[in-house]
Figure (cartoon, rainbow, N blue to C red):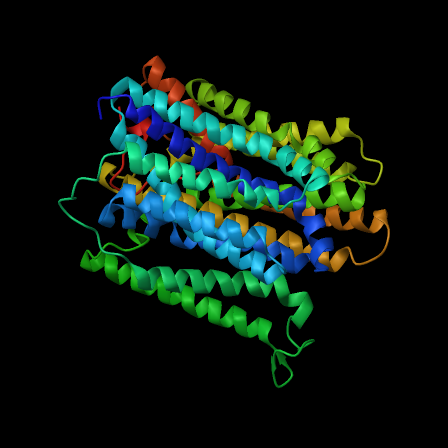
Length: 508
């Protein structure tokens, strides 16, 4: 596209990425208020966040494939329409189940269609140096959304209503869709349309859902003997959920391996796990996400229920983490040329661990902002340094024609790690924080934070199984800036296009 319309397209897709990023981070600080408004327990509300991650994790690759089949323009508009519809239901929601359907199911489905299409649209619309600029703008918008999300959510929750977080989407999503329809040319017909692995998506989403359900609801229904109405004899439904989860996930592995052998476009190519960097990079990524999202969930709960802060003040306390992640991503890019890619990842994980330990040790009703700020800045720097290079690790041994599929797997395991982190820390908070008083909340927060410390230690252990990764030649200045912005984006909200789209860092 050679006219000025392409810049309107960039504005449209950047706005869509912004609302998705803000939408997920806004709810982190609104959870205690939602619990009070709906008179609902924490495990019920945590399903809204965990469910969103599960839907996106299960359908992200399918969303990219749909873009390949039907065109990224059509897919983006459909995703924006679904995102707006889910936001409308969430805005007028009358209970946690209705909020779950609107935010987790419908918005999650819309995001899984929209987000792969945003990078695809940019890659198709821009070329050369302009593509570098477009990717940099997109990455900057993502970073800004993560940094400002908790503060915006805190302000809306405190002075207006958390519902306004979804109300904003009702304006921005249609505007983004209209901009793409008006200014983006119709998609060219692809020479080959990949098959949709709907069976694989159904198996993995069912298996993950049942796994998270068992973790989240064990204390409510009983880990073995039934404590509720849902039972088979005296047996709780929780061990049944775990058994069915294992069955579905094993079937997923079997089906995907068979599709891979037959060359039928599997959702996940298990054969690529023979590469150590890919295998252990994915495991490190999953544990990193568990610690990152788990810590944000825990601290938002602690600051409001443990310290009695307003949602706005809680957002301001968490604000330094966003800039720290972005700075850390730039440090990570620079460190690779001094110590290498794999050591950079390890040092980032160690810094993240230090931040988590500081939080876990000093959390109490009297914890000061200075202590909290020190902990989350260390944590954010570590997340930025490690995450900025984990994509390099994961894609280092993958053939170029499979890099899109591998990138999709990277994002999927991040979302899975996020969902598991929310489920586990939510269960800890619900079971350990049942007593009255601020000290009870602080004690539960400390236990949950020590879980994130354990997840971080596991990530460090996996990182030592990653082989040395060769450092690529230093790119041009324009591309280097783009890579840094994308690395910052990877650290906070990693999203990749479908497999036929070339990312900025791999386009040169």
